[in-house]
Image 1 (cartoon, rainbow, N blue to C red):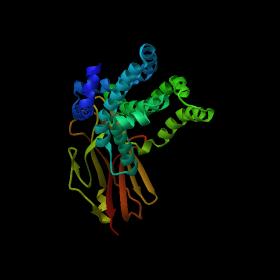
Image 2: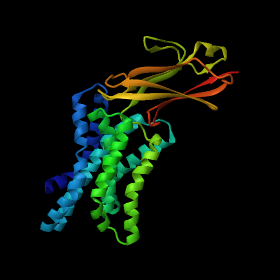
Image 3: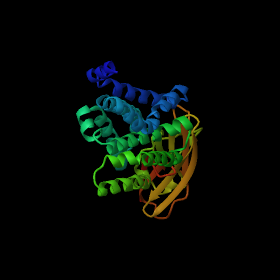
Image 4: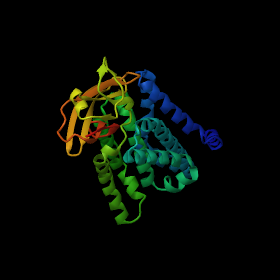
Length: 326
């Protein structure tokens, strides 16, 4: 164990680099239906049972030698957290759009990954209290679940998010006695207990701001023609008479093999809103090709139009725009 610690001290960049590379490898392979990607993804969930084992193992080791117990358990927890965060990052990056919520969410995940690699910061802000350790580990496990559940279980994103929140919240409740014991004062303990219930609810309410990790748009455009699922020329501006031919929003979406997922084409202009639902299947390296054709437009159609490609829980996959001239 001391040799492992020494290796980690000499090369602290090794585990994050390996985890980040494994994430990119899985991101590439999962689009082709490779079983290796599912195996890598399943390994990433090892952090979940550790959340329950850690308090018991820490107490057992501390009975024998307190310093060794803390050292071993903190090392394993930190290593697993690095694995979960750096594995998840490529999927988050691949799903992030130029959208404030996406950028903020992915930036926070990247900052957490950086924090997990800087030992002085990690020891000061995370490892010092059980409540902080449990929260940080739950966050890392939740991110991994968002990525892994669609890959390993072919679970649609609208099911993966609630199940991941329920699972992490349940484990936080089970570890609540240890977390409360590490806090001083009744007010702090009540606030902590309340946060376990409030935080998952807030994340669910803000689900539209989360990147759709696991899905990636490889090609998208506004056009007026499509043949054998091959889109025609890109269109950015249209005249009022051009609308009589109809307008097509095309998207090719990569998804994990075996995943059947609904996507929504949401057409918006001023007060006009129309949603068209399509079904995609995972496992195609270039993405599953689908489109939405709109042929009926309001009288006041002039101006800027937006077509958002969304998941059923309003997570943005791609935003397309075109302008109708007077």
